Length: 46
Image (cartoon, rainbow, N blue to C red):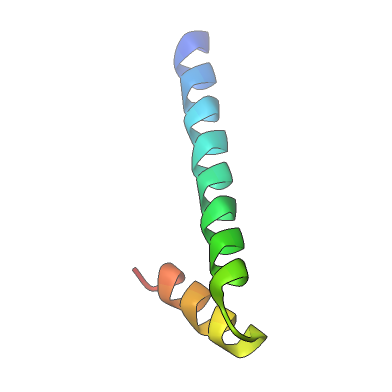
């Protein structure tokens, strides 16, 4: 059971890191904060 929990925690951390990378990429590629907000909201609505 402990191995499963460790694998789940690792997957969760990887998913959170990937989401953070997506947000950072959006912020770097948007001309203003409003555009970034719209793109990030679109991610949440997927």
